[in-house]
Length: 323
Image 1: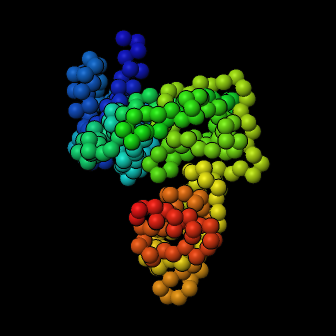
Image 2: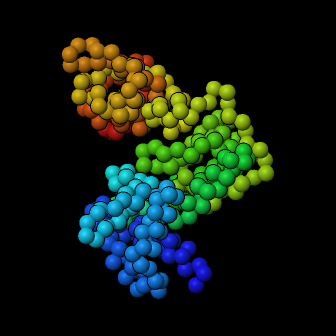
């Protein structure tokens, strides 16, 4: 056939992509046999050599192990093996991605490497025992929010929380929230949309997995971002995804808390040594249960020094938990 040469070139690339890497090269003999068996294409040593040269000239990094039978393999791919493993780990561990979608995405990622390498990576995938959401429609939520961000339009959506009986209960009296989305951000294993809430009259955050159904994109233009709004600054602040007003606090910390401080506040955390065993931390936080729980976990090795408002709220929470 007139197009056999073009088809053969594409099939050769497919074969090298799916079957080869540095540890698994293919001989010309094997390639010609597979061409015939899989696709009914006639291929010979000289045609394979010419096709390999054509692919190389097109930018594909195909290398040859020279011996009595030359062996060919694809030496370069979009992702190196450690990068691919990192992506697989992220998909597996994400609490935002359902178990079904995790398996689908993992399979697609494994197609980015050779089958022998994919088989080794697949043996290390363990999704079944992880806590995963069940809402398969979240991806449509993200798509709608992303479109609204790109077109600078408002969205409306119903938002829920769980009751003690594990039932969904609509917030805002069952009325939709009207919202101007600015960005989607990941924090603490959850996906959030950040933007201007008409109800709250300020920048607020909503968990995407707590949105009841696909947000409706409105014709109304989004509220422009406030002049002092910075998503980078917003994302770097610890406990930022809570609507409580932020307050500057001072804490006296034992040295063992430094790793956690850097995890939450970053390398630019305002710390100063007090002595060889303790340091002082000054930070802007939301005086939320999450912040107080973070302080409590150290069992007295992180102490609130100021302001009095924060100390009093912490004391009230402790008393309430003991009553």
